Image (cartoon, rainbow, N blue to C red; front, side, top):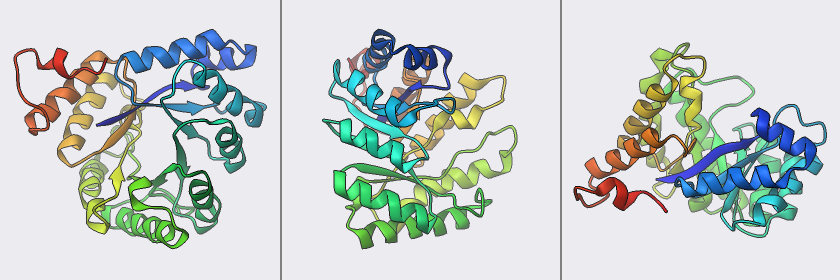
Length: 261
């Protein structure tokens, strides 16, 4: 499982304040803490309250790169903000994200091709959130076709079925899990990812819901997740799920053996 740490996000008060005050130490500590807990990449989001996101994004990228060469997942709905981050990036980058809208694909996919990045394609369009698996698959196919047409290799594409909060969309959970498995039928080289914390948004048992959904999604073939790697119970559940699926060899100390150092 490819883990993208979610915590460098201006929606969190400590990160928002660090961005405002240009406090490198707080950002770098957050980056290194997530890596120490198993993050393979770091999501980087200025947050909705950023007044100067085109300045904040490259500052975040440069600040993080001072202490790690991990892949950065540049997270913004504004392609201009993403491109400012791309200009500052020295190592691997994931663009997070594009929707299935043609006008969005026409901007974001060429950026991914130009800068040789990975791209997350979310199965949503201006018509709204899909209400069933078939609609998710339809939008996934449109994203894949557009990427192929524009020259983005399929191994650089992640498809996201858009996870919804279980407390308001309980009936859709099975469709979301089925979509993870069936995206691979569109093209076997494509990978899947989810923004895990969405599933528990607004719920009381957030950690338990996140943990349970993640282990189920792994069984359906999930390749990646944007999550909180500092949640040790979540990470242990992931390791155990992969063990049960025979992705790792059992030993009594398997948790210590397979925790990423």
